[in-house]
Length: 290
Ligand code: NAD
Image 1 (cartoon, rainbow, N blue to C red):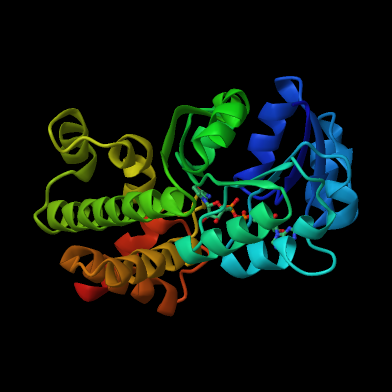
Image 2: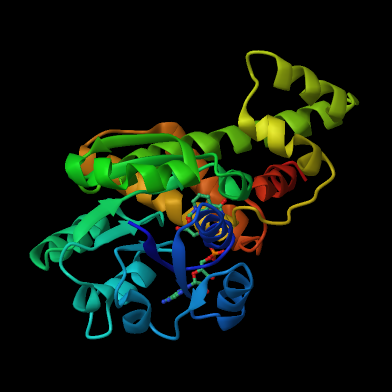
């Protein structure tokens, strides 16, 4: 498969599309923001001016959109990709959306002979640029095997995790862990500074011991400097915590820490930090502490 359409060229989609071009795929790009399409064209991609135009002739359509409503808008309706994609085409939705939306899109695709996979990612902007994302894939195992070489261009940890919607459940689990770690790193910084201990030295030690994590590795210095350029926006993590809390309710389980992290993320948004990086959870912990 060499003809790939990429819809949604934001913080994540743009570097992912660039990696596919570098790997030799013929990439057609579409985004409601035409400046973002132009940047992919400069790298060797082709521009499309609409979803139907983008999907015509594609063997694989990748969507990398903010949330469930945008995926539904692009997938369904007269101008939707499901209406214009040929039978046999793959639809790989790599956005983070509700598992039940992923299932609805997959059901509608299957009726049209389109092969759906939900394939959300973890690893952030850096992972997208380096082609080192973790990719969790829900859908038919044969479809996963067929698409695996393409996914290997985008990520290093690529797993089939179950039927349609399963990728989104794994992503919800990922997001509650990441959110929790950010909350605790923020609390560690507040404790160190309030105690008169240098947070740089303190967090260096944490990063090298059992408390070490990718969050500490990548974000400890910018958090201490109060630099919150996204990265991953608070708005999107707030959306993801909502998905995690709803998934827990559907599964009939209680996740108390997840509930607390969801409330802290909601506070970050309510305090006007929605467009900052999710490490701005630190601002909420600081405010709690006056
Ligand atoms: P983003 O907001 O930077 O990019 C989204 C892109 O979609 C934008 O370019 C926007 O113009 C475009 N778009 C919106 N509606 C559209 C429509 N109807 N048709 C065509 N284009 C449309 O978001 P992002 O950070 O790239 O995240 C994309 C998805 O990946 C989200 O679901 C997010 O939760 C997930 N994600 C993000 C990160 C991260 O670190 N940024 C990491 C993992 C997963």
